[in-house]
Length: 97
Image (cartoon, rainbow, N blue to C red; front, side, top):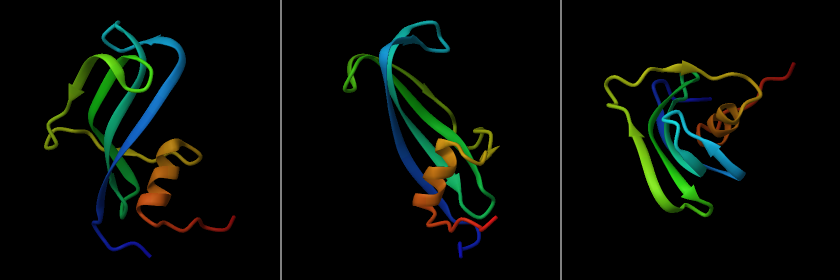
């Protein structure tokens, strides 16, 4: 059972085998992202993302921050990385189908 209104914040990290392009059209080999989850309402919002030009979070950095008061909440989509993070961080139990 989840306490009502419980918020958790997690950092996610992803690395690419080959450089990719960021939304700002710069090259990146990976990123870290700070995400806040609302366990009670099963939604999330991105607060900060830092792109790195090299693997292992090295090289030059480009970041995008969102004011927490203006960050949009999005529903958690079943079967995604966000659902896994919510399950672990929010100690959510999966419902039997």
